[in-house]
Length: 268
Length: 316
Image (cartoon, rainbow over all chains, first blue to last red; front, side, top):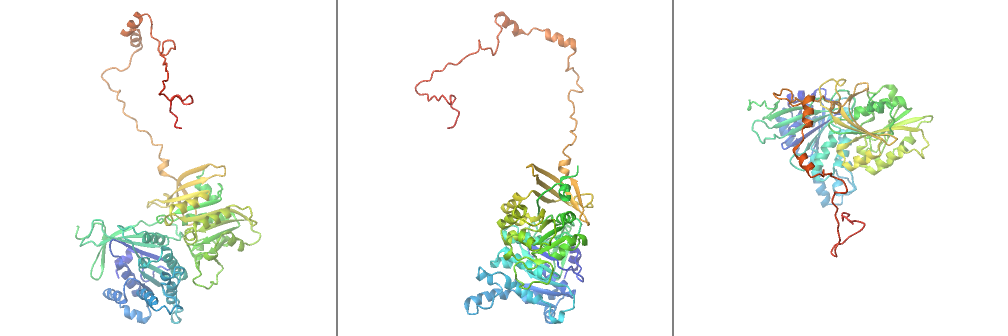
């Protein structure tokens, strides 16, 4: 968890905004540190976190979270964290291909096998996880849904429309839940799907965190830059869009340091 | 004269179908809310179709007086029927599978005795993506043409369209049937919104007479959904004073102009070649038919002379 980042984004980890969509994108570098940040920040804040992991396994996230001072295993056991292992879904898809007898049960990525199917089964998994359990009713803890990452869905062969439908339902069915999702889009690759996905998501996003590699190439002391764009998609507040913030960062062993552009200690 | 944008918003300039085109950099929703607010004071009911925004979010921030006139058609909560259960809400839910036009939805939720209504659609983009452009254009056209429509007057239709999620053909198809298109562009500034615009708006308005007006204006919308219009700086400053060019003849050591006496003396000078011409006795007159030349041309066998095209310049 990087406390510094919270203040730059304007996020209060104890009282996070409800129903917001936070979109993280990365280009020519890895933005997954943002996912780890939100995961640990919300768990430390005592909120419920629902994590749809499509990119990495639980042990990976656990190892990183441990460095940031959060124990995912105990969080999962106590029910604070609901970990949905998205890697299994691809496996299901393969098994379903081998023993086709179990046709009756819909698998999450049914739409990859069957052109007429929708991505509804994947949403059902999320919905079942998000539906308030008996023990939790009455509590009004903020809930967070993290999706790491949506580009995997695109890579698996889903269309932008299907991914948007999925995100829409995640948002619409749980109006109080804050959604964080990561999308990869490398600026040097002509990748229309991810670009279109980002554009559509940006229309709904309250906060866009754009992680970019440096234009000048790899640097040992500056790992990239982060652009923070805040918007109000509902159009209810009458304020001017806040000016975008651009920061550079360096990822350290257990934390990330942020500094204004061009003020790295190695440069000055 | 009040600005055209202001006139359109407060209804002095009639426009049956207004399309607001926004992008990720500038949201058209504040302007849409401002228009909705204004509309509610002019018509009996405002039918709002919500595909991009939940009804609770949309209604929050409006006065109760406005809210009482707004009827939400909820295309947000369950457009694909994945949840299967209808929520116990007063907002009527739209499913894409059953969405063929907007008019039948309005009809089914019409209260009697209503004289005039307006339609607001926020936004067309999900419908275009999940259904098709053709359907949207047809449905909008059907709303604007009220020949076989027995319900109340539809005074105005306002749609939001995210132009950067569609290809050009889709957006231009929608804009073709619109009477007014507002293209929004971001305007970066840190001044208060009452002093500097939030966004610039390129406005194309087609009057009933057929006149097409193009304008650029800046706009801001404040908490109470009041509209502030600013003349566009780039066009307003066109009449820049032309900087006075330095006069090169101002401080010369010699004289470039003639006095009257000097001019008379100059006019009296007989130019040298005039004498030569007069010596021959026949001053040459240029242009008189008598002395000008004439070309006689007799076509020979090789010439392909065409009477209809004597100088052979028509490409037949």
